[in-house]
View 1 (cartoon, rainbow, N blue to C red):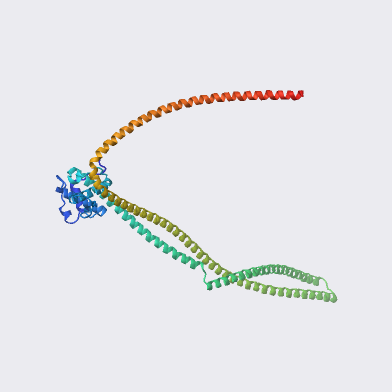
View 2: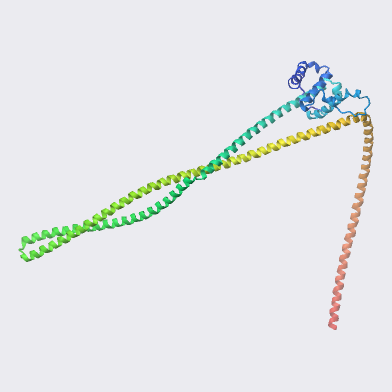
Length: 454
């Protein structure tokens, strides 16, 4: 049978057991000569006791002497030497299968040999190396678990602080609420006023444009009339040079010209008055534009305040998203915590169950040690009886198999016969049904004939 673990050198075994298993004077006095060429029985037994103490916390001196004996045993002094050896033997029989050593015997304790002890100690050394690595990994997992727990607590605190900040940002104080209501009312009023003033400004602009068009038309008419007056003056001068007019006609023409001049002056005065009115209207429009610009500035300020409020809302939303992500991380960490707690609970349950099983096994083995020592000679007789029983049972099984084959053959034959009988019955029934149908048809024909005759 090949080993599933490496067989170490004697120097390596001695160094390992000195550093990791033995302590004090035992580690100093433990040497290579205790194992090879002839192992010392006391040293090997003490070494096994120290290994059991390291793994199962058995007191290496007292615990193995405390095996319970029955009260009515004769000569208990004879059992004082056998009890610790049997206790160590039983504990090693429980422990060594974990190290993949399945053939440990009492001879390895009472009369150890060099090669055998080296293989057993190398298996124990391999298991202790594995145990040390597992303990380091478990310690690293525990440290990571503690760090995750600290992170979880920090995240929970951060989430609580963020929730408080969000509540503060979402809740507007009463002073600011009144200001916000006033600002909203002022905004609505300003919007309504701006709409009305913009409509008035539009109407004023339309009126100014109409006045400008009228002024342009009247200025054109004035220029035309001036040209006409100038042409008329030239014509009058030419006529005066050519024709000597009568004084009455001249007077009438001069009066007409004066009336025309008066009309022109009156039209000029009206135009000037309209210009003044238009200028006043333009000044009013400029004042309205200035007021509108002030209102626009107020609107821009209100837009800036609204942008700030929107930014605050965005910050609140980002904080809410942050809180959601932190809550997700918290859930993940809580799930990991639950898994780790379950794993720890499972480990603790397993350890407790194993401890209870070990205690039960110890109690049972301590109770059965005397029976095992007394019944050791009877085991061979029982084995022979069991072998005979097994042979008898094997013969009976062969006979039973033969009977089964015969019964199967007979069953198959009977089923074939029954199938043939069933097929015959079906054919006869079909023929019988056909005959019945023919008879019914003939009877119905006879009945119709009888009816016809009747």
